[in-house]
Length: 479
Image 1 (cartoon, rainbow, N blue to C red):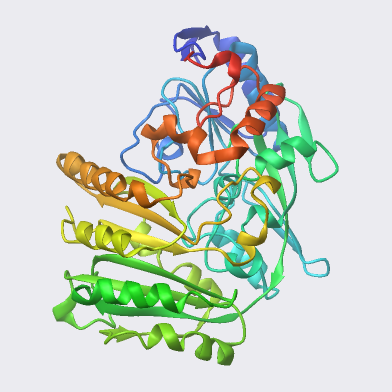
Image 2: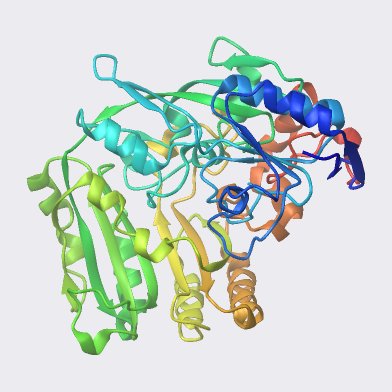
């Protein structure tokens, strides 16, 4: 390697000698990549195709010692750092321009102890990796709804999906984490060790260090659940949403039902004449006895006159992958999100109006159903603040051609602004795009002040800033 000019924390350049880079490489089990390496483009390519950044160097970490060495190298040279787990973050914070990218994707190990019902996962593992290992023992970790998502980013942001109402958020099941802090030390964060850091990791994102291992509590579930879609004509959407709202008022914790509004993809169970037309789908999962699930879902399945009802027993692992085709990598994506205490009639009207103005066939609106066990944890127990919300809206603007950027992004922003007066004010940080840095404080609500304190103790120079950043008080207003 030659001497390199890398982006530093002051947004300038620092020259790193070839000898220093070679010395770093010699301390690693993994590899150091630059732009000349054949593996470079694969390592820097992430889920959101709008993000096309070129790190100066990439450390492909093989274990915790590699992460320690990479963080120390970055800190000593004051380099801009990005950390990649699954690379699924909408804001693209997994990769930086010109700085040092720490790629954790080779660290994919997942180990399950079926006696204690615990799992240990490395940060490069995906939800699919976790599900396949845990379901081998009919156990589950509550995670998200897209199996290609990385477990690290999902967990650090909070983590919710089909089993959250029954078993809590992903962070509610986090028992400990091994973390490399900004000074290059490996510490264990748990309810008894570095308790302030453990609190902050549960929802505070990647602000406080690089997690090299997660320890989780698992729960009995599977191998089958009652799950599937009920698809309605969009002409009935407002009536369906009002009845959906009512049906969920007394829903058991085992039942979760999300809504999806978009143009119908060519699903095999939909009549061909509906392909490409606007529809509303109720996506439901009952995490318990299948027969009990039939009774619990009867009210939802009895709404209106659906085009199709394909709810039935399904392997949990398969249901976890059901939305993967709609969220595959390679498309351009921009998201906007709100938390809602309720789905008012006004909110329903705003959502349905937006679907009538869809800018493209892959754009959609998800409304996630939360509450249950997750809502019975006090807001101050973890950094994740939005415990009392019942619904989470995520506006998925998704398209292929750069010339559609403006139309799709403006569509998402208009909907976000129209819905804002009816929203709770907090936000799920994993759904926030890159341009919402000024929203971070509001997103964390009453927990933001404590996050600032923890950030000041563990990363006062803001080495870990490629995230929804909690900027230390002394650096506010600085780059």
